[in-house]
Amino acid sequence: MTDNVTALFGGPTSVPKPDENCIEVLENLLEKARGGEVIAVAIAAKHYDGLATANHGGNIAGYAIIGALEAIKACLTTLNREE
Image 1 (cartoon, rainbow, N blue to C red):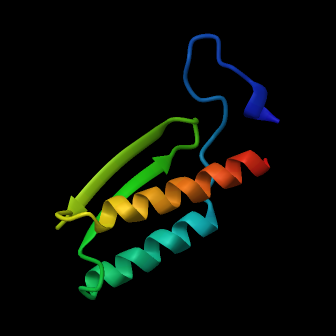
Image 2 (tube, one colour):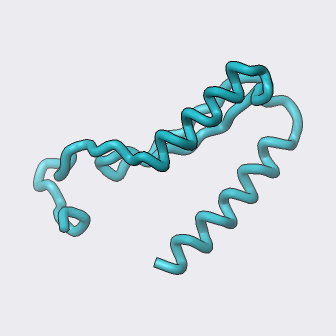
Image 3 (tube, rainbow, N blue to C red):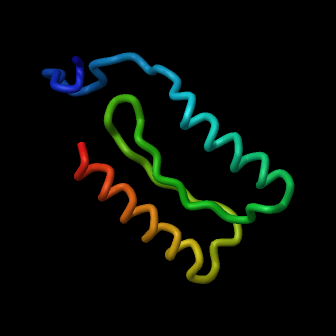
């Protein structure tokens, strides 16, 4: 219900609530990184207040990460069109 509420002076209109699927995805990647299987990440994150941030780390040289980002971009575009 707070999705359509706009704060008059900016700022969040709700309180943070953990998302179990998000936590599971991050923990899975962290486990693989600790084991040396994942050596680079590029992450886009949506925060509870609607803001989004991006970050990257590791050996990001090459085009593999860019290809993966294009694949997830297509997936997210499809999911948003279905809503």
